[in-house]
Length: 287
Image 1: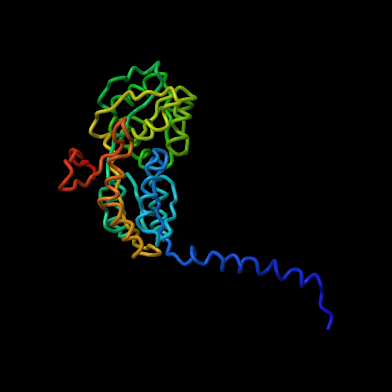
Image 2: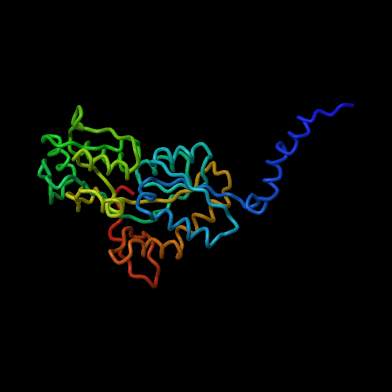
């Protein structure tokens, strides 16, 4: 029988994926736990610190992180594409908890939203403590506003504030529907001289090279609470439980409490240990 040299030459190529799988067997043998988290956690830098802490504590598990807005993160949980989600939209979280899409909602930490804007402040909102009234003033002015427009926790809070103000967002080019993450939304607002609702940690972390300034804060409706939940349809519920237990434990609390360095903590853990004075403040009324 005649052997085709072309087919013989192709055999090593066909075997390459199998050889690669064998050489990587150590890594592939680890169970994978999938965490779906929000853009604000990634843009602030905290997500990387938490991921590094978990990987150090649990080398037997392979942590895979996906980043999106809150709405998409919850959709990952619904479709069984994530074991654990961290989101910051209390009303939505309560709803999907009641629907059985997620399990064991536990508050993890909080910081605050702020309305940031250009130093010129054309709507004259600087120093206001009523966020809804500030948005109404922006709508009545010539100022522009950048919306995440992505069903993220930040976008949902923005919509709630417009509703509290009793008005619709400004029309036309003055309301910029960005459809991007928090960091990119800040950059667009900076480029367009516009206002934007942002979490304080991302503004501190990414705002150093931008001209945006925090203008409105202090409203109780601007409290930004993050919660961690297990997905009911988790691919590996046992691994998901290990991740959640670590996130609400002492080691993760230390990471959260120290994040921000000498400038001060950017997030406040919701859980207080017996050996640590509590600084969490009042609970989010929406949680």
